[in-house]
Length: 103
Image 1: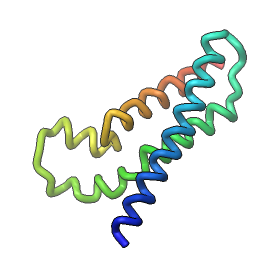
Image 2 (image 1 turned 30 degrees about the horizontal axis):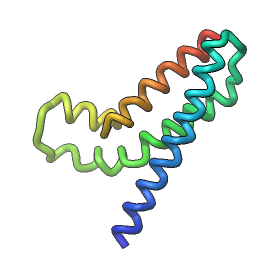
Image 3 (image 1 turned 135 degrees about the vertical axis):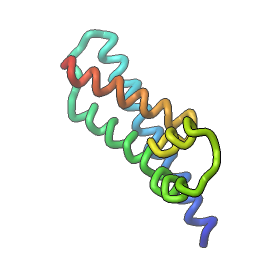
């Protein structure tokens, strides 16, 4: 039922976060060593983090119209930033995009 569905979302979020964050850390190490970056690996990291961000975003933004609260918080939720981990995923994506452009 509902609890099982919620647990699936949490597991899905965790798996994509861990995969994306591990790939980010690997690429960060490669970039720091000034070695060539594997763009396919970088794209996979971006995909994983994008999936992580999208996991709960669609459910949360559907109810946003009637929600009360500060506009800045509503804007963050609308952008898919639901926690500090989501924000860190956005930062990781930005840095990986920078590395891709630099390669």
